[in-house]
Image (cartoon, rainbow, N blue to C red; front, side):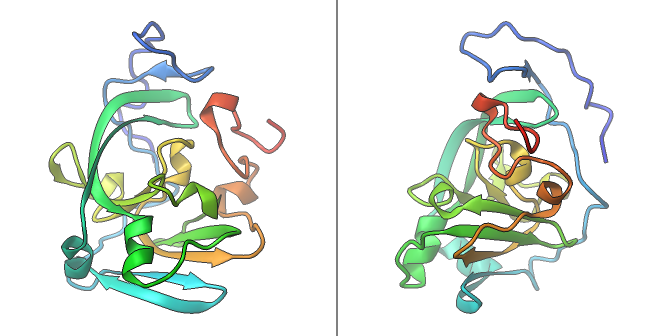
Length: 200
């Protein structure tokens, strides 16, 4: 689904470089593969699995009781818009792993979400402060259309990797394509290398 802000002003002159092929967006377009799910924080939970074993589960209150990280970062959508200086608050994946008493896994990870969406990532791209579960955007609770109450945020990759309505991370030995990757999107998705589609 695409909202009416999708076709924003296409500015490419900025004070710092944009990834190739990107234009600067002032708004925050909404793009989703399906309808926005109705997620209740009273029943929401999040799990981490390693090779099929659940190693940690967090409810809404327990997630918010963990150390919170504030992050200002640029975000880049595969549909070629970039938004500068977005403000987020949430919990790093490192904090969750430490809370579960787990050393950072290697290999790969699959993010799974309400609505059936999935996306795959190398495990190295969600640890060392590079991945967060975010619940606040621009000082307000993250809106459902942007993935609230909680979405994954991996700002150094195209935004489809920052899965909305996140419910689990499953660490795996081998890489497996997620939803958009099965339809021809790149398995990694680095905006600075224009890795939009399979052969990019």
